[in-house]
Length: 404
Image (tube, rainbow, N blue to C red; front, side, top):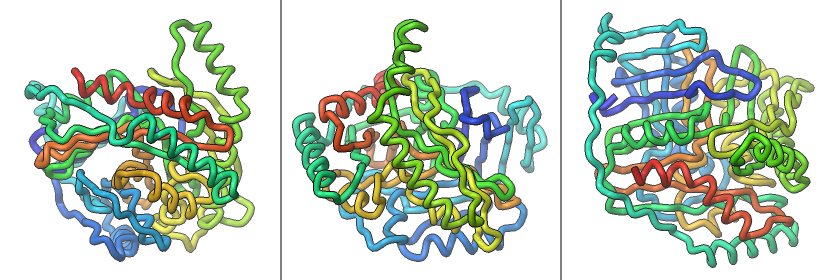
């Protein structure tokens, strides 16, 4: 991976996958045959035309949160230190897909690529100690949560996902080594290592945004988080606490309803259904409440249009979605960029699978700027102190990976 200026690894990390919707364990894509970059205008049409005309080939890349501005009359004026384009996809020179049953697909001009990889020693380059600090103080966070709750009282929104940034502007990282540490501390089903020249995204996401398999669309929003216990008995108690929390169930249900509406825009009438509601899945750091919504895609809806109709994901905005995004811009201080966006791929048959970019470290090696964001859903019943503690809980694995 270190030999390529553009590469992507999508990794299930042998972890639980809600409803077991994937048969792929890991994908490695490296080198560029061709690529496309967002220009800040007309990017959805650009991607749609590329996918429609695509020769049988895989396409890997990302969709940034700020593509929302090309869907609705919205804007993002906060500083973006990472500096990624709003959209980027590439066709790889080398492709390895490892399936969960142990078989694999290899596409490469080097027939001995796997043997060469196995014989290559992984090198670790020393990193400077990172001094992570919050962009928003605890006190300011609490004031903002209280202000958001006033919007909820006034009926502007029902729920809003409010996020804050942690950063260091003098960081020197071995990005791949940090990713390996992040995987070790937080193995998740939608992990990703993505390099686009000087930019690195180290992702330990537990959440799927949208998947198309044949004629079926799947979305699996996460709303509801609680820490792991120190024993099996304590874990079970915490799981029951999360499962029976009226607040967490209400948050999850609001986003499930939003997702149902989003999928309905792309789907056959009457085909949208909730496959799983309020299921609890356990990861190394936390327990999460995950629901699954599915539908049958309309034959006149393209793959890119289905993504656009659901973008950005409701679990990272709130409801109603447009007003929530306007308030996010008002109360957050960082341009989200790829955070709350999606990383994934399009297959040759126009199927696709994209995650939600959360629990992710972004690093601009040229600027020496490293950043990650964490957030939670704010509702009328939210306790600002508890929401801040949830943010710190979600930050733990990233903090630890950057510290070692």
